[in-house]
Image (cartoon, rainbow, N blue to C red; front, side, top):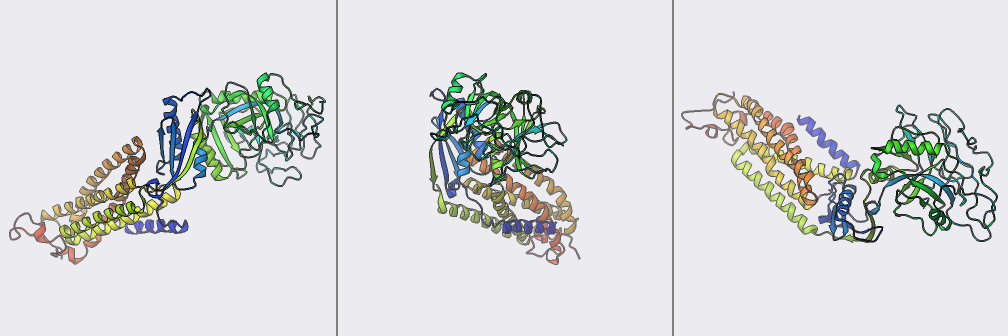
Length: 597
């Protein structure tokens, strides 16, 4: 066991060296951070309800402190919400906390250029599709690119999942331009790279022609009539579009107002822009809303190797998703597309190749691991019930500083020294075991704190330090229980030291495990019921409780058994702590302790 513990310590040290992590990350009270104040905005300008604010606080707290150990603080201040995040320059956190992050799926009703062309350059005909790349549905197939494109553009397609399950896939070009062309003129299928069905080179569906080959010349939509040079609505099918939405669509200039952060009412038609503002859309009422999302996670597509976000729907979500994909499949372009609207912006508008059932979808695009995780966290932790504006963003200094940190470390050192002195005076030679056990526990604790900071966002704050200091006494209790059990066995006068150590361990470990289990349960309950500093204290206490168990089982007991082979302890030397005088309940002359040869 000693070799196993040594291997663990060396492995943790190696991980620290590889990641160049030598010191812990400090929390808000020790290193300062970023403070963001969010001001709620309601549609009618009235004050938000306390219920909605409380819900927003809980969601934001989960977003910025999902693991519960990053020492972020979220609190209400009147009608505002104040978020304090450890560390300076937390731009990604600032971006994360305020977004509504509610994904809505809407059928596309009409599309157009995001901005009107310069005077004198108005189009004389309806927008025509630019050559679209064709993604092969075959496993391991490659994606062709439009000629002249400088950078590859990810798929923005919706197609059924070809895996073992019948769940459908909805592929989107999240964080990228939904429009396949580099020009400002929209295609008939912006963001909707039409993929071939599995095993085919081209696909077609009833009522429409086959998808255009990337090498074929562009052609106008069948329903696009000739239009006047100054008509911005040329070629737009207005059937079923609300007049108010149509007017907004006609006047919208995405270059001036991309609609980022807009509150799109799910029960109304919505006019929005693509992320880069090159395309504008008229979208139908939301067919599936973010509240129907059951789970969201990031992962890697095993076929293409690209990062994606996987969604699973709940409640009525699967039926709603199947219905909207069926409706889009049976519609003419561009109404054969389903737009994904996140925070008021169309992140993708994929073409639906077949009705998708199963209640699952995948969002893929030019994701990195960081951006995929970010989007998954936004969706996983729910949609905010209110829209917020960032009224202030400030970098704050530490509230405690180096002096307070130094004071906490000095207090811990004093407590450790007192335990060492007590152990050496009372247990003498056995005190060496307790001292070395504390040293090992300290090394493992320090390595754990550093590695948690490097891999899990853990930041050491004053409550954590208090929890670590308190744990010194908890760790010492385990040694005392074991040593006293050994002495009890020796006092009986019928056991040698080696036998007493083994018998005492059987009895002591039960007591140690029960005591540590009670402490760990208390830490877990406190961690989940409390927030902020109290939760940090509970986390540190739970961590050190687990370390205590590992050290006692893997170091203290094996080390005591090893010392029992030394004559210094086996013969009951006066300084060993196991001498006859200390082991006797009666006078030494009337009762002696059997010693080993």
